[in-house]
Length: 156
Ligand code: NI
Image 1 (tube, helix red, strand yellow):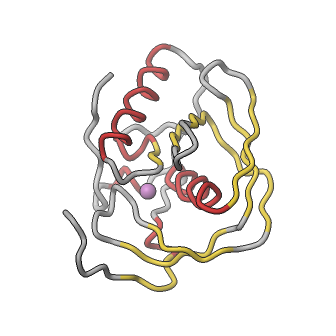
Image 2: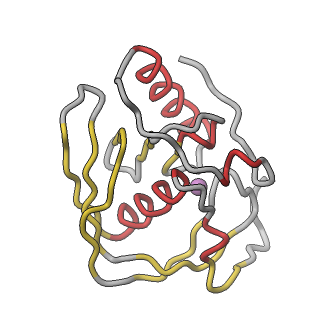
Image 3: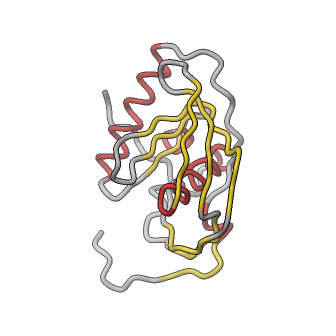
């Protein structure tokens, strides 16, 4: 496993649509491992999408504190309600803002064994799923911010 460099806003790769994964091979599994490692090493990240490590593939890792979820070719198939919470992103350090998201989402994806899985997310998990899936379509959260928020004593 290796820590990969996190691509920062301004790099075109973050604005591109990612391609579906056709075959779950060793390279894909290694990439998922590296993404997990990179997300955990960043410390304050609850999710990471492949374009954030420079790869235009539909892969996401998420951990909101309930364990790791790895998603291959994820698609949101249901949404319900709404919530407005403050978001940040490892590709936009120091940028925070309120974003409107569904309160509940159901996402369908392949796990690393190629099995089709559905996960239901509420609260932070719902936010994180939406945020990370947006990355796969080249959308950064700051495009959706209703109101930017500044933190005075942010640790760098
Ligand atoms: Ni992000």
